[in-house]
Length: 88
Image 1: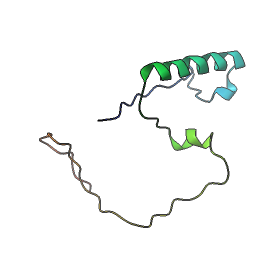
Image 2: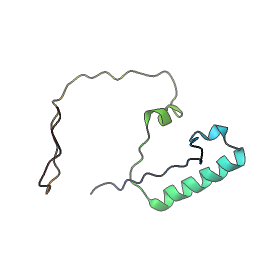
Image 3: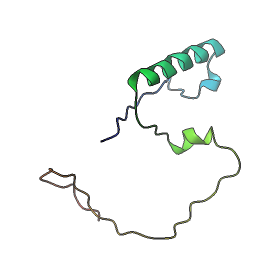
Image 4: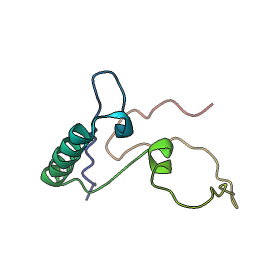
C-alpha cells in the first residue's frame, strides 16, 4: 500500500515561517489549528527539511559518511510506458 502523504504548512502573509517572531497568541492559535488539521488529514508520513529539523535537533551535528556507493539509474513505475530522462 502506498503511503498517504499530505503537505500542509503554516506561513504568514509576509513569508515568515518561524513563529518565534509572531505574537504569542497568534502562534498558539496557529499551532492548535495546524495540529487539528494534521489529525484530520490522517497522513501516513511526515517529511521535514534539514533547516526545519535543525530546530528540533539536540547535540552536535554528525556528518553523514557513506560506506557504499550505488550507481545512478532511472527508475520507472510499473505500468508507465515512458521513463523519465536518464541521469547524465
